[in-house]
Image 1 (cartoon, rainbow, N blue to C red):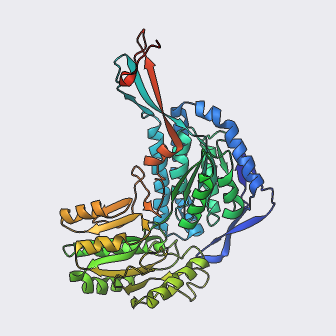
Image 2 (cartoon, rainbow, N blue to C red):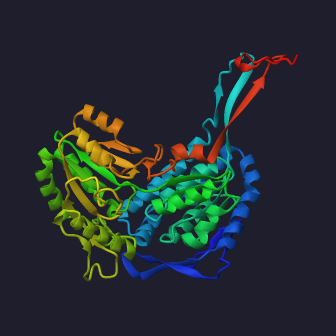
Image 3 (cartoon, rainbow, N blue to C red):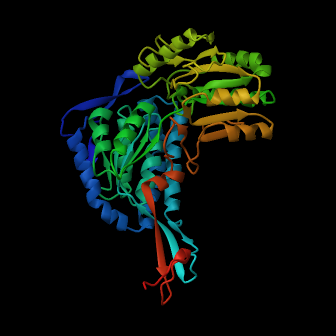
Length: 497
């Protein structure tokens, strides 16, 4: 297909007249479409359109804004399988995960549709009985939504849904690796009745389209999900503006912590799902398995045995667990960290990396790389995000050691703890640095009504419906005096002598 930008309710080409291709990572010969390589002029037109219609959209009933998402859900449900298969082709996610991605997008739209009829503020007691006090939320204005490729349907809805239902207008730039899914999101919202200018789509790369969008003086909030390096640049740009907020979720170096009293089968399943779902390309994927020494040898043996049996191949095959990495640079990055693990003393249990052969020749396929690694505070491979199935199994003796190993990274996004002892789970809950924690579960599996975000390098905000609302609105105080005289709080004199 020939994709376009969507600006002020019209599908248009970029001013550059230049394009880029979206290719299937499982078969790089397959071109799914060409899309506009936008520039600052395209961005300016999109932001101008969003700013122009903001007053009218803000003035619309919040319930009417929410009804757009009810209609959106009805349309998506009809085309669920078609969208899932398209996603599997564009980003390489296994078909089961692609279906779950579309379902999560539906859940987000349902959440904000329901939220439209929920309170938009609070009635609060005043110190003065004759006063009525309220907290009300107001939309901030124009939101720039910049999303990654690995959840190309759900994450856009995480950002677009709360922003739009609260009365903001949006300029949306999807990842250049999944522009087709980004366009599909906008097409369905257009069909659902979103008014012209309220939602605008600008395709392109980070340098030519993303950077001018972040820097634009008429953008009030930048909501971003992606790498720490890009997120850090966004935060710097926003810090130079007196009014602009950056809400950034920026990856993680996550772990599954397995105690000696763990249910062994749950521990294995949690570790396998945390390490290999989406081929390790989730911000909540776990590249560290922190295992008690009493279970360590057995765990390593069985985990490697099961890792060898992981189905790798065509994302559209129902039996596939791991599809390809998104692109060749992802494969090179994994091979770099595989080498680094060896240099830092890792004892390789399962050689992994790039796969060649007839069934893999046209895609960016890799197999799991698994190694034993004793903890050392200086280890880069235990502290840095790989975004691939590079898995370290690290032993520990005490709960204090497990906590120290988990916390010794600049990230703090997700963790899972496998134990039958609620006291151990509670210490992990209280002393580890994270945003999403799971007990007897994998480190993946977020639900849309819960916060999603982390600490340290993992982010500055919570870009999901449950909490993004607080970033795209500002709270206002509204106090009404019902008396015939002025009475002030804190005992302040109410008359000028």
